[in-house]
Amino acid sequence: MNNSYNSKKITLLNAISIGVGGMVGGGIFAVLGLAVSIAKGGTPIAFLLAGLIALLTAYSYSKLSLRYPENGGTVDYIDAQYGEGIFSGGINNLLWFSYIVMLALYASAFGSYGNALYHLTSNVSLNTHIYESGILIIALLLNFLSVKLVGNIESFSVIIKLTILFLFVVLGLYGLSEHSENIQQLELKNWATTMNLISGGMVIFVAYEGFELIANSVSDLKNREKNTAKSYFISVVFVIILYLLIAVITIGSLPFSKIASAQDYVLAEAAEPFLGKIGFTIITITALISTFSAINATVLGSGRVNYDIAQNDELPKYFTHQFHGKPIGFIVTAFLSLLLVNFFNLESISTAGSSGFLLIFTIVNFVAFKKHKLLQSNKLLHLLATALSFFAFIVLLIQQFETNILGFSVAIGIIFLSFLVEFIYRRSK
Image 1: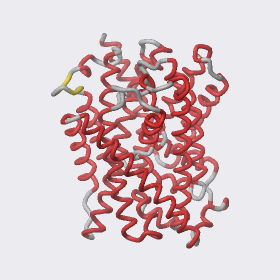
Image 2 (image 1 turned 90 degrees about the vertical axis):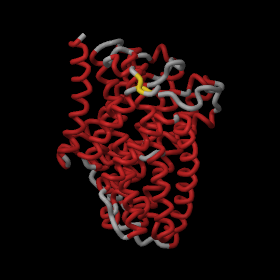
Image 3 (image 1 turned 180 degrees about the horizontal axis):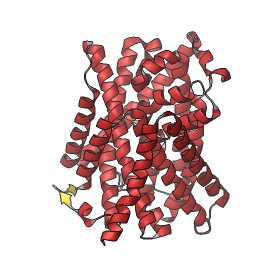
Image 4 (image 1 turned 30 degrees about the vertical axis):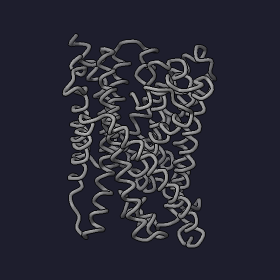
């Protein structure tokens, strides 16, 4: 994916902002409640486990993006190792499909928070599919109208959401010191099983995947050799700490029963005990701004990924065609996301997104391991990242198979479809 900084040299702070902005998008608003429902009082540990995998994978990305700065990005790393074929094409298709899933996830979160805000102001609820479908269509139109406008929305959103979340953390920690009746929920006896802690962390792994956006900016990064690794590690560590604090405050502020009933908009509900209705409203509006900007950026990025895959002859050249000056993939991506968000629930969508990115990151980590001499990197760290990513992928699928067969089926179906599309395309050639 390209980004708005590519026309000029960017600083270390710019690169960190891209990574943090990519991670703290719609994911934390969408899946926090789901993570708590699975991991219970151990949710901070679940976030930490997911963050560890993200941090190790960021090491692989830092080395690969430094070696391939001009092209950058997951598609190019996989092609550099495996060349043109069904396997590389299938994995790259999975990347595109995973972005489609992310779009559906963000739209689902927008719908839940939008409905919560409407219910608060009018005491009436609407079908969330109205919000979900409407925001995807608006984002598609905005991307056709002005890419610059999309970039400006993203820049504005990063400032707003980080400011509000910082205030949420500060005031939330103060609130816990004054009212700690639910803090015992964090005790070890209230943690879920080890399997559920791991799977809970992996369900919310989608909240971390955005650090990979830094790869698309490395070619324009000042002091590239010095700042590439810093940009990855500082952004991931910052987000890990932020997510841990948010998880602690949420569980310490609300009983599990309240978290379960407000699962789809739990972050707003968590602000109410120490900020009242105004806190609920502020966090809800922040969630709407954040998920809207994430949808805009993902429509833009996924459309371009689709275009790049077709340019590499791993999808039909049809996807390199343009409609009103923009890749046709914009429309295809938005349409498929509309289908997904209207026919599947949040947990199934989140599972599909997390499993897709875990498998993709497994392959990227393995590519870094295979190229460690060329990258002049630590092969054991790459190998550890590969093993942990794949282990987490398997654990997530097992847990979903036992508790949510629909989520398991959607995840496996998207992976299978990614390779089937590539196989059919190869055969047709």
